[in-house]
Amino acid sequence: MAVTPSPSTSSVRDGDAADRFAVRDVLERYTYAMDRRDEALMRSCFTPGADLSYFGGLRRFTGTGFADTFVSSLEPFGFIDHSISSLRITVDGDVAAADMHLCATMALKEKPAVLIRWVEVSDKLVRGSSGWRIAERRHVPVAQYEATTTAIDFPGVGGRDPNAVGPS
Image (cartoon, rainbow, N blue to C red; front, side, top):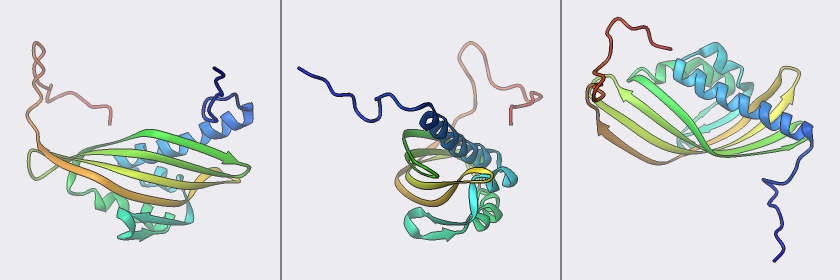
């Protein structure tokens, strides 16, 4: 039986791998900027006039508009974490596409609960003089749940040092 490698596992030119790595860096900057509420870093992820469709089209932004407002939209949450999975990046010259799942874990400030949301994201990125940036995004939530949280108390270790400085 002959086995044909899939396009995702076949060998690629070094330039293709470097471009995919640079595109992934944009996506990771986005999640880091979101989780750290870093407006300047968020601006570096999008072209200023990017066409962004969030929540299945319920909210639309430009790149600048999103960077201007995302911090205030996170006000109901304390700790947040966005994780990327099922990522597929393709590059064609100065244009790239990225399809992925994002899992957003967001601790609510007003009650001991965490909101977990899975989102399908499709991006079109363009390479310009400042590197790769997202020019189009389609963000569609697919599932969500809310769960009660408990105090941090790891067996045999204990809770959390109230005087400790966190990595954020």
